[in-house]
Amino acid sequence: MGASIHYFDFGNPEILGRAYALLLYAEPFLSAHKNLSLSFRFGTGVTYLTNIYHSLKNPESLFYSSPMSFSLAAELLANYRQSQPNPEYNRMPCLSLINLKNMPILQGDVPKCGNFW
Image (tube, rainbow, N blue to C red; front, side, top):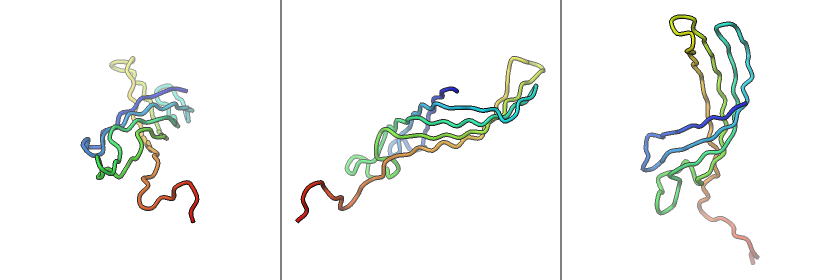
């Protein structure tokens, strides 16, 4: 069990903005040996998006429509403990997939509450 903080730069800050995520995760080990261990990390959390869609202020951003988002993450990690020359350092390559979920953008004729005669 643990927590992680993520920062995303989408490469176009004027239109797409940036994202900051806080994820809580579980990480069961798939194998653990003296110098090498493999684990799988699954997490979920919240994401804050800095530049969302707005029909007048930011119509080109068609990716996110609300500043708060739901996040899912899946990671496969390898932890290699080196014995020489610095045994206190580990190498930890990983393969990550992080998905930011968001509400859809509503366009066109959206029904309003009330009587329709």
